[in-house]
Image (cartoon, rainbow, N blue to C red; front, side, top):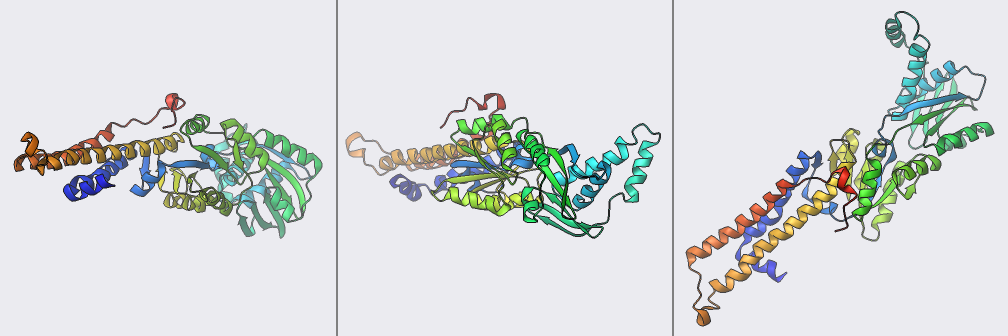
Length: 400
């Protein structure tokens, strides 16, 4: 603090340049590497991140959900079952809903007509003719699913909690089928019609290729990864095991994600959040450092401090590493700014003149003053040579 006080009195220009120049250069370097940084505060906090919380769907996974199996546990035909579910999900913006609608559409207009002539023409006509059923009273329940009225009968499409809250009984054979899906990291979507459980749709969302390496890299950097998802426990644990995350919080409502973050912040820890959806927005705001996937929703991007424009989890490593390198450079900037003054001020004041005859002419003092500012700027510009850690070398990162 004494050193800083000396610099403030003697050479405020160097002090004023030490931090802003490094921040400015680092922001540009981050943009070149696909990491959009919204401010110096976020860049400063990222160096101290202790926990990074990951959403599952669209963050650890590719966000390209696809239906793998549809099984009916009633007398309803499979085609009618898919049409019913697609009609209920058509108004939802969730990736799983879109996957179900696409699967039902392809079942009706491709799978059944793949051998017929003029398939493409029939498909276009079928799409325009309105093959979905009329839906009324549609409502999406965050963390649960959707419900609506079709043919004046209530349709429920969602997870176990949605059906349990509506006192729908799930058959034993369906429960066994669900457990098998969840142990294989698939999500089971349950469907009830007119108060009766009628079937299950299995949805899979493949993991991003770099996910497991990035998680291991974060551990090497001294950062603790946590997965928080609204999905069921078995699916969440299967996905977490595959990527190497030990700390899992499943069946968490959107508001609950923010509560998890606040609980981790109680001891002063800096918490980062990586997400992509509308449901992640409260958590991105609550986190000390919010990071939004560039392909995510506009609300998530607006709420975040960082935007990972290339949609790669590798950029989480880049964001933290760049922050640490930047503030290491800022410390060097202060060192350069102080070094000249701590040496030159006593000489300029004539402290050593009675003993050695050493003195500092005014023109040389002016050169030293300018040199302290130039050295700080040049030091900051060295950040332009920053190279982000590669996936092949991330595992060699050691705790700084």
